[in-house]
Image (cartoon, rainbow, N blue to C red; front, side, top):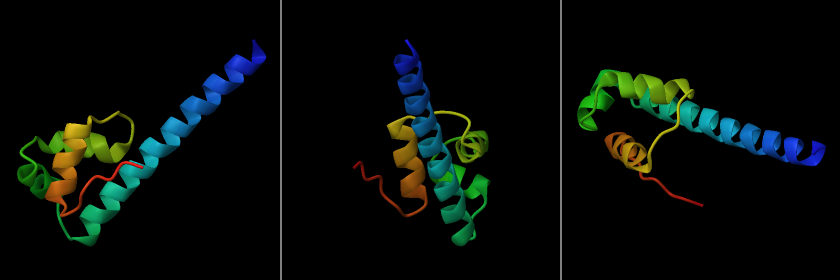
Amino acid sequence: KKASKKEAFQKAYREEVARMRLARTIRETRISKKLTQKTVAERATMPQSVIARLESGGHGVSLDTLNKVAHALGKRVQLV
């Protein structure tokens, strides 16, 4: 029982770290390109609030949304 709880915790922790890393990368890329959240949102054809939530790292993101944001930032999604 303890092992399964530990494994579940470790999996959730890894997912949270990955989500926060992605959020930080998106924010840093946007800032380095001197773009506002609004500009990125317009380029990605989505509300600015989606960009804000994405950069907060507190929410999951669909691959479609991630792809649109990456394209708006001049990047591409690469799955490894």
